[in-house]
Structure formats: C-alpha cells, structure tokens
Length: 243
Image 1: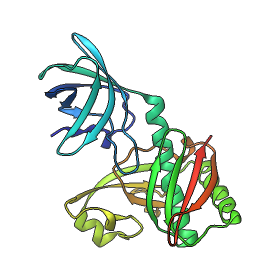
Image 2 (image 1 turned 90 degrees about the horizontal axis):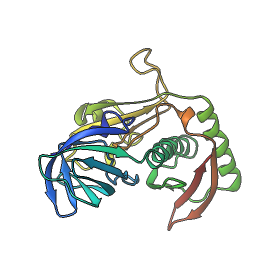
Image 3 (image 1 turned 180 degrees about the vertical axis):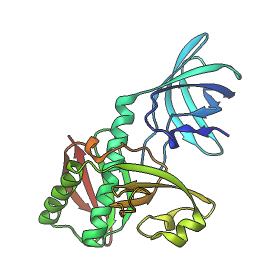
C-alpha cells in the first residue's frame, strides 16, 4: 500500500518514488505527497517525470491504496518517477482547510453549532453547521473573530494518537472523532494554538483530520464571510473566501 507521505509533511513540493503498479491511465507509487480527494479537500494535481516522458496528474483517489490518474504516457512498473505538485492549488487548499478548522471552532464555541459538513476549493469554501439561522450580525462577528485568530499567528501542529487513548482523553465531539469509521484505529490529530507538550496550554482547536494545513494561522490571509444559506432543517451553510 502506498505510504501517505503528505500526512507527515505537507510542505514537500517535489519528491521521488517508485511505480508499484501501472493500470491503464493510473499508477500506484510506493509513496506519495499527492493528496487524494477526501474530507472536503480536493485532490492535488501536478506532474510525474520519468525516463521516457512526463505525464500530468489529473486526479488522485484513495481506496485500497492511492491511485494517480494520468494524462500522458504511463511509466512502467519499477520505474523511478519525480512527482511535482501544483503548489498554487495545494497552498490554497492548505490555507482554506486551516481556516475551516478555525470557523468550525468559532461556531462551536460561540454558537454551540457543530460542523456537519464542509467543502473547500482553491478560491472559496463552505461549511455546514447545526444551527437554526445565523444573522448578519452573527456573521460579521464571526468574520472579526476569524481575522483576530489569523492576526494571532497561532501555530498549527499535528501528531498521531491511538484511537482508544484519544477517546478516553479528548472531547470526542469537539475533535469529531465520533464521526470517523470505527475501522480507523490510529488518528491524526491537528491542533491550532496552545503550547503543545512545551507548556501544556490548551489549543484553540483540536480535531481529528487527515488533511493538509499551513504551519501558522498567519499564513491564511484575510477572511471574508460572504454569506449564508439554509440547508434543510436546523442546518446553516456559511461561505467564505480568503484574501
């Protein structure tokens, strides 16, 4: 199975790997920094270069392993390839995903509105929360708070944790562990703010997440809450963009 290298280090823009399998227009690598679609975050795109050609990575999907869909020549099994990630796209996804974590935390702490869904792109994002209706004043207050958190340049860190330990030690609803399939036994926890092990200060947000994120909220940029719509009974969709 492909080693998901993006989970350990989301700052890598270019890497080498070996082709484990070639399948029509798809390849499986022994390790990859290309992020597959999941958790509301779209897949990475980019290129694979190898002896004999170059192909564009158009889609990345994860099922039993990670499959890279290619437009162009397909390298043979055993070939060494160099993967290069479209960093404008990935960087935007990292900023929006981190901002979504901040928005989820603000809505939960200030409105008792848990997140029930989200989707991000490279130029906008939306979040669905359990709440009857946010007023224009609510949204303005949320925008101010988000930009304060960006200005604070809070550190963003991640670590892995055994699920049983996480369920015993962490707030499973706030960390959204309860939304994950029971088959996932090792969790990747993303924290924003706090001092970590250094001083034990509680983070502003702590969430089980396999997405990619920036290293500090200061990298997010200005947040603009662009509006809201009602999504069925007691569910609000909040949309935002980043400067």
